[in-house]
Length: 362
Image (tube, rainbow, N blue to C red; front, side, top):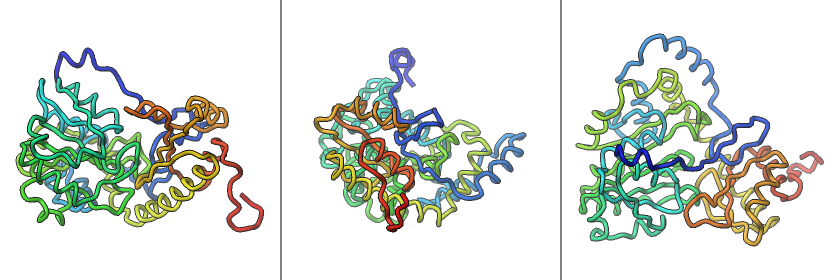
């Protein structure tokens, strides 16, 4: 990290509502957690009287099975953002340039600047079309799939082709897959894709977050995935005891809960379509297509501040998406369970919740 930059770089805004009395539709986290998490946590807390085993064999094995890579390619980190910082510490030096997508996660540009490097902003949906010559002056390129806040995921073939061009240019590709677990799409780290990479895979670093999919954002568990020399460098650079015992044990357990993941994906897909249809037809907002557990909504002629404040008065927190680069009339709605989604819709003024079974109940 660049010592000069630390003193000039501020924080960036995020979703997340600390008041438990308010419905939080600003943070894109699962409202459910896998059964049995509490027991695993309590057991791990008792074991926390000793230092964690710094090898994290169980956690690495669970993470590797989940994404389809080898366990020694998994680098445990305290959350997805820690994996992103670790990758940038490896790839960037003061004076370097990095290709940063927009509108997208605000921490990318902040983390680039903290390394003393300069973010070069590119429309997120234009990044993958850059040719090798355009990449040669940059040390790092960042892809977020599904993109936050728009929600659309990258086609795997396009991602692999771009990784190969990054390799030709000598550019590290950081793929942030924080929300990919909500989809059936393969990870950029999946061994099944290995034959599709000409020589680009060793230039790819993947960042994953557990806590969004499994509804435990306060746990701070995630991992990076690296290959070849990058893997060795990431493993060498990661902090000792990079996961606490509860985070490692609960994380490993959650990654094995296949039925929970399947049910979550089905619910999010169904509810996302239902909420989108009602927001478009009843509120007249323009809603972006999404593969993620959130919807980006252009409120048009409505005042964004009024929309957010009215929802807040009705007990619901909505994400102000104007904090994302190039968005000036947008909000973002997190997709939760049906009951919560109906409360969000009502707070936005989308009418009464639907009576789905005809018995008069809502």
